[in-house]
Image 1 (cartoon, rainbow, N blue to C red):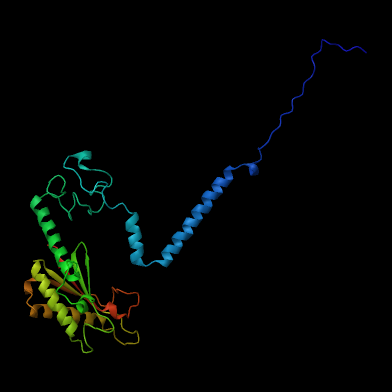
Image 2: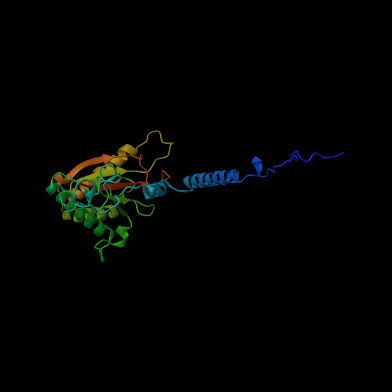
Length: 277
């Protein structure tokens, strides 16, 4: 039988499809790796929250918080030339060295204060309080304060002023069993009265005590902390401090412990604050 050569041959193309199945692709691996990384970061965060103290957590938060300006010393121009940004002192706390209340500069535009004289006065007060702190902590070389007394002094600077904390230990209390000041506290009072002559800031005295056993029928912490603060006020006056410089005397009982153990002797302390004017 003859084949008709005029008919076109039939050609069948078979298309080979590969890699179309979803479980053979690689996109899900990237998503899974991101998920595992996120879970690891989450569990590390939970571990850090459980393994650190409140003070350490605050330090970590402060480290990752943008609380200072991009440029620590801002210029004297206007607008963006003056350092305005989302990180400027109008948005964030004033903690830089330029255009701040803590470290005012000589240029009015970079000071952030309406009165140049007021900013200069604030800067002078900060320098004076730093000098008092350096003297109490013995940072300027030789100190007139003995090592025995220095072990009972802690200082810190807050928005309110310079806080000088005088605390007791189990071996060296500030008050005896009858509530009378010990020789240690009398010596500390002389130190505070002496360094207060370096500045003219008013003072605030705050009394704190450790917690008492719950088996007591009546909690005396409020009365004891009040008596401690008032007796230290009397010691300061006897050491020559002017009565007009004492701004307030406050008792906090056992409501603000310095240690996690509420009955720790370290919680019995006095806080003397050199208030900012």
